[in-house]
Image (cartoon, rainbow, N blue to C red):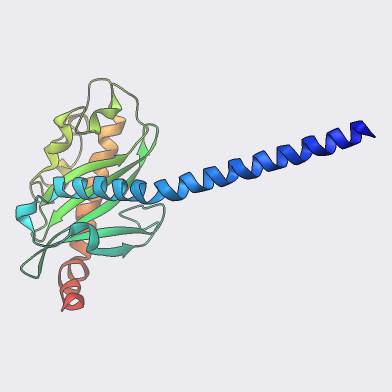
Length: 212
């Protein structure tokens, strides 16, 4: 009988400790959820400002968004994602398009490509990748300035056939020992420019009507 009672008491204590632990974890999560979300939002806002610096617009980039559907033929997004508008005096000066290079060496490379109304690249930044450290990770600005080579490029300069790595007869350098990664990024940035050109009215003109 004592054994049964001891077992019941032990089970009750374990259940009580589990409930208390669960409550503490839930409380910590609720307390940290808002600060984490705020930190992520601030980091995202800083990255957008790297593409369109403060002097190029007068709106809050992170709050001026539009939806982009998944699995489009050019942006190749895995899920519905937001793009961003840069406005100056009420006019859409540029947009930031998310694009996925699905042919990276180690999988998807997610990018943000800023495009001016003129069709010129404002800037490109890598959101995430799984490329080889010391080789493919040079697509990150903190590892290499290579990503800046897209700045001010258009679909005319260089010409379409030159939108490739040097090894493929193009204009963009590859990394020593790594061609697949830069090849994938060059193709993705080109696709983002093609998307901006194809959807120019929706991105730069109809958007303005929505805002009026």
